[in-house]
Amino acid sequence: MRTVTQKVVKAWQMGSTRKVDNTRTDGSRIYLHGSCIAKRDENGSVYISDGGWNTLTTRERLNGILSTLGIQQRVYQKNHGLYFGGMEWDGGWMMVR
Image (cartoon, rainbow, N blue to C red):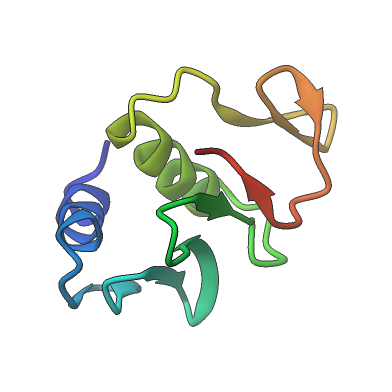
């Protein structure tokens, strides 16, 4: 996991704000280049999205979030398609916890 991801996800878990390079959190959401890629609702449920950008950096950030939450499934690309936990995924909002 990249240092940027570690720092921002740690702040997000604590409910704090943090910005490192192109990634930031307001304590409840994580943004990459201004697109929201993760959010936690008032009940503590966590949702992820590719924010409309299936890029290597987006997948790294999402996988860092999943890893930090102890979730084994990963986001990856196969044959130009986006996958999560072995299933094709359109990148839209999905509850992971």
